Length: 434
Ligand code: SDX
Image 1 (cartoon, rainbow, N blue to C red):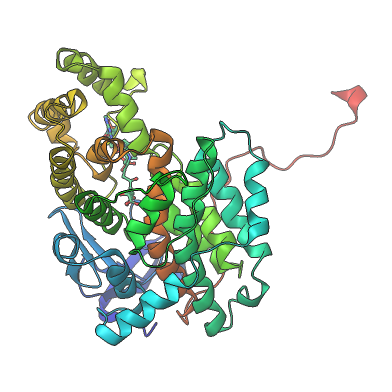
Image 2: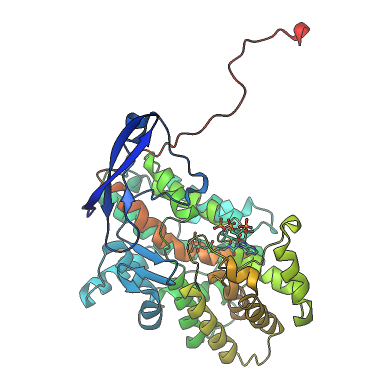
């Protein structure tokens, strides 16, 4: 990646009678950054930022979020336009290469992905090692990491060709592995990929087809899931993407890095929120019980949070949430589901929360996970598969970010420091003197 940092002045820090000057840089959009790489050398202090609320961990040219304006851009294109007008593999090409493909590039990329959708037959044995009630995310962490044992020809991260083939293998095989995790959990036989189908149609066929009869794909549902995948593809330096970058900074192979990203995404504060949000809606159950849960969410001691609400960056409506809500209505409409009680609860919960002073003051809006659970459930997926679908889509973003990191000349192994507040140095005491 060619750096595009633009000098934007200098910042003076005065401490302990000494003044240091730090360079400030600007980018294309968003806040400027103060370059603190010489901060410790100049001041003898570390910076302190648990949770990285004020820290830019890298320069990136892939995705941009304006949390105040509720804007999300993939390589400069607004997410709403891509979700409406593009498709999964075209947006995948955009994230990986920086530009929308022309017809020839799209055909070549689609062919490269399609020709890698099958998995090694021996990989299937890993599934039998899991209990049948294993959470599909536990299976995904295991089998994606295991891929590194099958592709020794694409784990040398210093070889650009091997980085590309590993990237194509991961994007192509993640849906197959995810569908296999689902089939394993319901005791049905694995369904082979069908190269005649589009990326998302192929995934739905592998999930819902059975050898005993033809599975009829509903184009409205395939289109809705394709949109949902586009919404989930990338999102700047979120927890799981930062995990992938940190793992990759040590030179770990791409399969292991993506497995690390899947593990981080599983958390209920992150990608696990879609499953948690549906659990919450089911627990609330009816509209009249909403005030009780709103009160619990405001009570710090309750430990309860409205899942699907709030975001580290969005302090306005998550633009993906708006597209998600429309996709939800499209899917329920296509399925002839007139009154989904969970949707009634969700719509009323959203209405109340958006008018409640607590949520307004804390700028807590519905995020992408709020409506995705209802939509994915209507599409036929069990709750335990919701975060797997998130991981399937986010694999493209993780790979784009991992590649960008490796091609960034300034990158080095990530190794944060700390503030030690433990016990001061002391001598060992023999047991008879303790
Ligand atoms: C994703 O980072 C990404 O980009 C993630 C993601 C992506 O695409 O990769 O967008 C995907 O992870 C979306 C978020 C999904 N998570 C949830 O829906 C879980 C519920 N939300 C929260 O736990 C929370 O909002 C976070 C984790 C999402 C954000 O937490 P922050 O930024 O660390 O904010 P915070 O925890 O400091 O909360 C700020 C205040 C607190 O109150 P005070 O301490 O200031 O009094 O808001 C309150 C919180 O108590 N608050 C909530 C709340 N979320 C925050 N109160 C009630 N319900 C909530 N959901």
